[in-house]
Length: 54
Image (cartoon, rainbow, N blue to C red; front, side):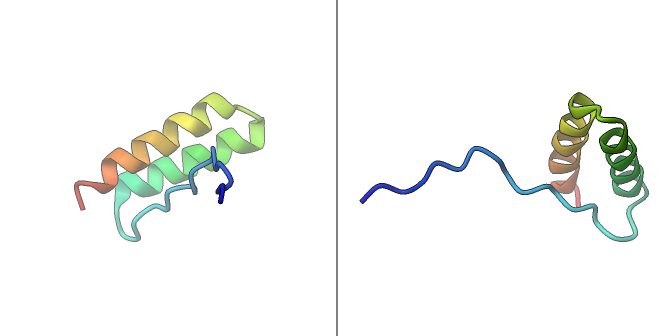
């Protein structure tokens, strides 16, 4: 049995009440609206790394 390969990870969610998570979430949203995929990806990485501090 072969399982499908999933290349995309789910988007990390900002932690409610965290100012840094909120800032990164807003930056990611604005970048997405502008079509700036690089900044969206960077924000996702930073949100994943930042979550470990909660």
